[in-house]
Length: 293
Ligand SMILES: Cc1ncc(C[n+]2csc(CCOP(=O)(O)OP(=O)(O)O)c2C)c(N)n1
Ligand SMILES: [Mg+2]
Image 1 (cartoon, rainbow, N blue to C red):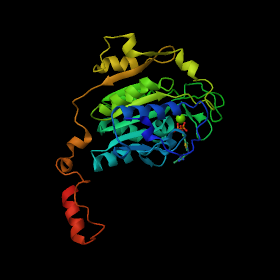
Image 2 (cartoon, rainbow, N blue to C red; image 1 turned 135 degrees about the vertical axis):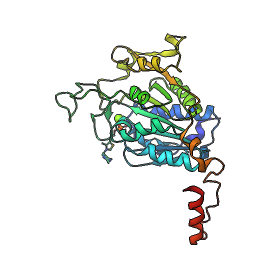
Image 3 (cartoon, protein in one colour; image 1 turned 30 degrees about the vertical axis):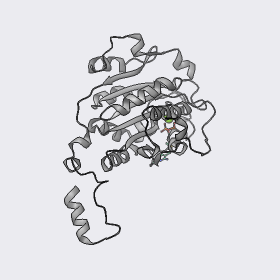
Image 4 (tube, rainbow, N blue to C red; image 1 turned 90 degrees about the vertical axis):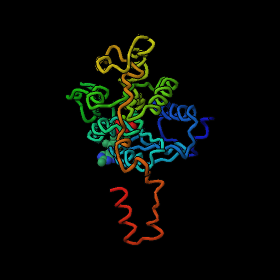
């Protein structure tokens, strides 16, 4: 499929050189490769520079409030299990204000692909430190350097029960597209944390900073086994000098949240008779309650 089918006419307001352009491109490439029509996909975001992404795509989009895209996406996946549900949001949105939802989505395992635009900073609000900012990182809200140790999202995801954990880099949209395809093919929650340089507010973690440190797991070690949680745990802790990209962990065969909701087994809400709007009688509510509650 031609990825241009996902192009939207909206004027893009990201800064020139922003890593979010590569994430947008990678997502379009990944959808095109899987021949997914625009109406078959829902992209859910929060608030932030990166969260503007659904506006720039010709797909179903839902910009939620700050930190809340995961629960909204879980609801959409439950309501229509046939929909391909992708969440795209920033590090602040995912791991800061949305940190609680992140933890519980990992252990719930809904069929959602979660792409985090991790620029290690709050971009939209002009560069305050975020949960993934390295210790000592200087911003207007951390003038003497951040005093907090950085959150390690990959290790947190593994510890919370995530069944797919990967890392991409905004300087490599082709590898990122492959990671998105793998995440979407995975049955369950897939986290893809993307190292995404913010060219305006993060002058430390630049394209060059990442390029001099990252390596591709599968190229470096052909024997790397992503089904091993021990191997993934070890790789998730590599940072500073060497940073692995690729699929750190992929465990299939764990039931998704949707698989376990008995009301959904042979009765998708989408296919049910929701004639409530045409015929709002009390019996209609009762029948819905019987089916789904
Ligand atoms: C409830 C709430 N709190 C705070 C804000 C202000 N706010 C908007 S975006 C943002 C952080 C954005 O950072 P991130 O999620 O990393 O996205 P980026 O802009 O870096 O892509 C904040 C704090 C808000 N919109 N809503
Ligand atoms: Mg950010």
